[in-house]
Image (cartoon, rainbow, N blue to C red; front, side, top):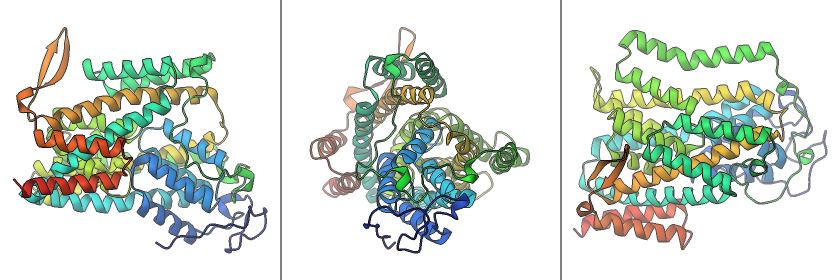
Length: 482
């Protein structure tokens, strides 16, 4: 896409033109700010095609384009929307696009923004899933994915360090993170219960004004560039007319979104039975859409264990392969769920050809994962616009984010065990079940490549795509030299 140039002439005055044919100022549905749907379509497509690097990179990209370059919205409103999306289950970066698209152009804008953010990833992951299912056992392809596993391990560890540096700012946050890690690693406590417990602790801390919970959690940091006041943005600082909720609107949007989300699940259950693989995929990923707070890596920690250990849709190494696909393609990291659904039906296709079953299940997993995101924004955002700076909500976000650090650490250890060792066993100690590697099964090549990836990430600050490309090439080279 051709970059849309930034306006360097200073903030426009409400009611005037910004030099690109875009009027400014507030107004319902975007009529006052003058940014047309055609312009919005091109901007959101540009963001969707450039959205590499996980949620932090994607949010920074949106901040640079929407706040610093185009000045559609200001800094305060951007961070307020982000904090709300961080409180929601599901992918916060995609939900942020829906929120801002809705602010600018009502429901149509939210749909355009949310769909275009996801679409490039849907196409990319589906193509890679087909290649993986059809040619994953070919030695050269397997060698590339062997290298990707080392890169993914380093990237997940980097996510732990980055998120921990922002979230664990005092003893209370550190204690919540440690408790969350122990709960999931040692006692197999369900992820939703960990998030619920952390959120309740944060709400209580915020409500009673406990010092350790002051300030809440800020989610991902902004890009760090120019600060644009809300009053200087095209949208302005007032609440748009369409952002004032009514009971009729809330009931209507809830009914439509729930029908689009739950209707296909009900139809599959009645037509195919509740034990059919398609129905189970729809139900499982619908549950993920409701309970997976804390961002993409927190989702993966739970899905990886369930898809491998409970449903048998994937082998441990294959979850890493799927995450490698998601890291190298645009769109939310949670798009790896499409790969999980694809492989689940590919291995249990019923009467359908395996590839067709995989494609349909991948699209189904994507549908039930992302449709609820539109529901959370369209239903909740009008109310949230009135809650800027709410102390209790901020404290709940901070506690949940701290717990997520512990959950992601569990994910990193789980990945490391299955990358570095060929054999991992369950060991029971004092009523606890722990995955323990067989030392003799250590994979020397994987250990060497993972160490190199960690050095590249932490010592030389190499980018995600650079590390992934280098590890994939190294895996291929190791295969060629035997």
